[in-house]
Amino acid sequence: MKRPELASEALAAWTIDTLRDGERSLGRQELPELELRTFFRAFARAEGLPERISLALVGFGVDAAELKAMAARAKATCFTTIAADLHTAAGWRNKRARHPVIVAYARGMVTGVNTLRLFRKGTSRDLTLTLTTTGRSYLAQTVDLRLKI
Image (tube, rainbow, N blue to C red; front, top):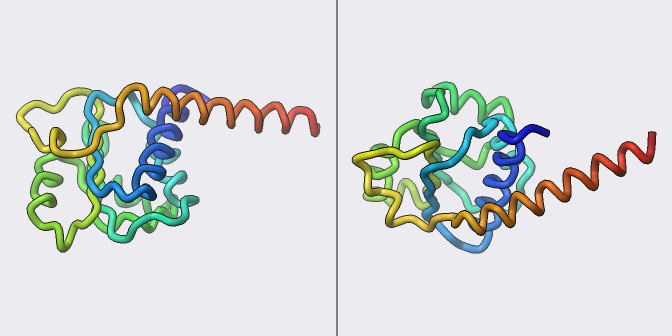
């Protein structure tokens, strides 16, 4: 598993756990490169998520239409609205009846948008601990598979 895949698994795992704990606004900038198919597949496998999640993924080199197609191919049906810019996510905040759960993530720094300062942020510590757990789980599965061969 390469770094973007591990980072995607870790971010998805932290997001899923935090949403299950009741948080309804998550955001983070300055994220590394992600493998978006891996990110969406984690959500497709997840259970116990809230309904009507609006997702903004910014700076990952794909537009909203491609993000929607990736989510559909992965069968990540928990996302009702998907965007590729933070200004859209800022608008969602003002329409909570239609967007009760908002997740907004950006690769690198996005200037001119203060939306994320109002959202719960995964700290570097949170994400590192989740990454460590994810990596440990992946390593255990890999070793287990090799032992069975």
